[in-house]
Each structure stands twice: as structure tokens, then as C-alpha cells.
Length: 239
Image 1 (cartoon, rainbow, N blue to C red):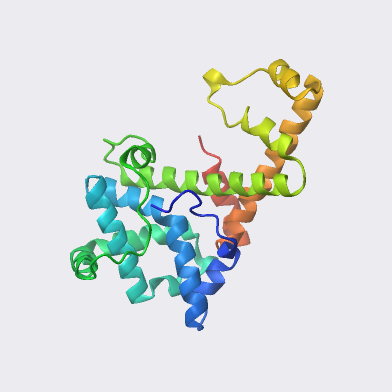
Image 2: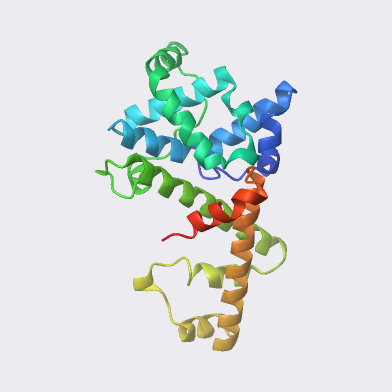
């Protein structure tokens, strides 16, 4: 679902504005970005809430996006009244009563799809805190947190490449993004990158600050207003 470069379209910065645009082309572009960016939380919620297997959950996720495209529900999203994370969850609950009709329309459409379904079962299982979990709210929140964080990390990496700081990103990647059990020491990293341990610490602290800034920017891009930004940040900061 989404392919190797899912969720990182440059037009994402205009997504919320585009969803409110009267211009059909701009709206369609924004809706496409929305689908590519937010398929995973929707899939996880559907799979967990309705106890579906991988293939059935993917079909229902497609049907959900079809339903959204038909009723213009995303045009009603108002950032000042709450976050997109909460609004999408409300839409998923509303979809419950319409899912069979939407699924039928999707199947009558033949091979047409709204979102590329490229992810395999193993990757989609990994999106769940526990594939056997019966708590759709927790599973949805975990998938949302992962989506926002992954987008911010990818954008940080691209910026480091553009600024000629690829080694800074590699250092960050090889420490903060590694499982704790296999994480190298500062001494190991100092030897690998031919810098002293103090410089390792300095660069890691700088990259963490930049990542936090990217996450804040990501929330702002998707319509989280100033009044809701801190609560969303607190949510994302949870373990």
C-alpha cells in the first residue's frame, strides 16, 4: 500500500488547503496526497476494529477512501476544531454503517484502485502493536504516530543530503534509529566517522532538535492549529 516512496509527496504542504479548494484539480491532487499519506492508520483501524484479515482489511480500506471521495467529508475538516488524527478516526467510525455499500461499489469498479496496495502482510502486521489486539484506538494511534514520525525522518534525511550533511544523518540513523540491543557506542561511532566522542554527542543532539522541528512542521502542514499543536506533540511524544 503506497509503494517505497509513500507519504512523501512535495504537495503535502498544501494538502489541507487543497481539500478545501473549489478547484477540482487541486482538490483531486490533495485527496491523492491524503490517501497516500494516511492509508496505514486507516487500514490498522479497520483491521483491528472489525477483526479482518489482511486482504479483507485492504479491500475495506480502498472502500473507505472511495466513500470519502464520494461524500466530500474531508472538505468539512476544520483545523481550528481539532486535529486531523481525531477527525479521520471519526470518519472511520462513520464509515462503519456504509462499508458494505462502498465495498460493493468498489468491486463493481473492477481493477480500479484509489491507493496502491504494495505492502505485504508482514509489513502490515508490523504496523499493529499486536496483530491479535482488540483495541482499535491504540492500534490506530500507534500507526498514526509511526506515519508522522517516518515522514519527518525522511524529510530530515532529504534536507541533510541537500545541505551536504549526509554523514550527520547517517550518524543519527546508525544510533537513534537502531534497536537498543544493536546500537553502537559513542566510541564506535567516533571511530567510524573519524571524529571525537564530543562531536558525536553534539551532532546527535543537533539532529534530534531538527527532528523535533520537522515533527512540529509536519503537524502544522496537516492543519493542526496553534491551540492543538502542543496536545498533538504530547501525544506523539508518548512511548
